[in-house]
Length: 145
Image 1 (cartoon, rainbow, N blue to C red):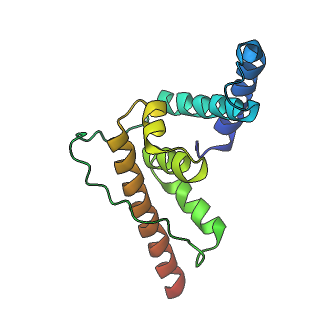
Image 2 (spheres, helix red, strand yellow; image 1 turned 90 degrees about the vertical axis):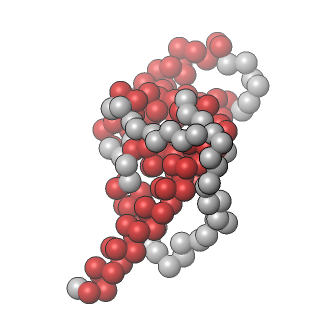
């Protein structure tokens, strides 16, 4: 999510300090792993907010988001996909990561990031489109050379 190994290590370290300090507040409403995961994600988001992550707000009434079925990317090496995810703008990368990799739905993502559900859907749709374009451009350049 952070696209920077040192930032990720800092966020993870801060998250585990928070886990150890707050273990007494764990109420058992979810698994301990889910509780820790939520703390880690919140620490990542806090760090991104310090970097002034940008989300494009859209009107809740305008849900013109293409919810295309999940498509496999079997034609691409996973390292290529991961590399290109890292090239996405922070807002796109965070929503894409939370939705595809972490399994949150758009309502939960909206709550986590403090944006509307429609904004989460819009960012996800734009992230997918941008990711496809980045990969396609890269593949085209590889074919030429």
